[in-house]
Image 1 (cartoon, one colour):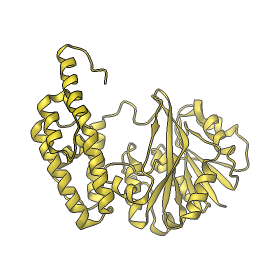
Image 2 (tube, one colour):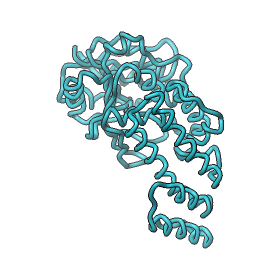
Image 3 (spheres, one colour):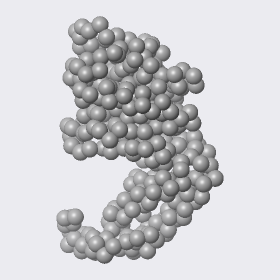
Image 4 (cartoon, helix red, strand yellow):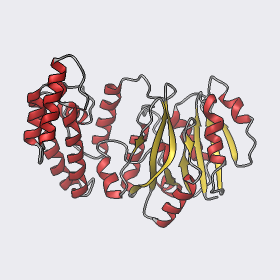
Length: 335
């Protein structure tokens, strides 16, 4: 058996036929499909039972434990060389598994890989993920390096190191924790192609959740997994750099964030959680992205960022001024 596809299922009845059908219709055919019903309270289980395909196995959890524990049940039952993850409300493109198996076969050093996501539903955009293993390593302190709904993993690595989703992990962000757990055992990468259409809407597990509370815990766990020492203030500065504003941006905090990023680059050169050049580039990307959110908090805050930046342009100055003029006039800026 080459591939085991695992789909945790909880109250996704309206989307199941399309999701499961997108796997059963793959151009690659050497796979088993394990659907794990996590004690759904809708008719998800009944929908699954109406699907008759010899490759489909249905597992029923004794109690609701969340997507991570449902995935664990699938991992324990899997026989494939590779594990492919799939969400119960998404749509896999027909060549998804074929492309991923070929990529993993061609790169035996990789422990896991993924691809890009095309959002649909309440949002329509493409979510992109780093391609190279160096850039995936550099992403780990900031967030998910590989999209779980479009991921493939080497089962031998999972088995050799007993890697599973933790029982006490939060239901939101367990993918970040899982990749942090897997990272010490080998590199990860992503294909440039969109592999999955990722459905956005109120059925998503993170819909309406407390983003600041969730990411405070996850960011702390990421620092600890990577042996990065930090203070509470540095944790909240890291969140601010990720556009999660537990702290209101001020000139003083922008300066503190720049110092923290400089400290992180020094720590990386000592701890080697990512190649130096890739990590420096990722820090620059995070820093530069923050600027466009700062004029909301005043010109001094935005100009402090520009002053501390390696490069800045007159277009950025114009953007900040335009934002403040529009704010004073009571209308949102057009750009």
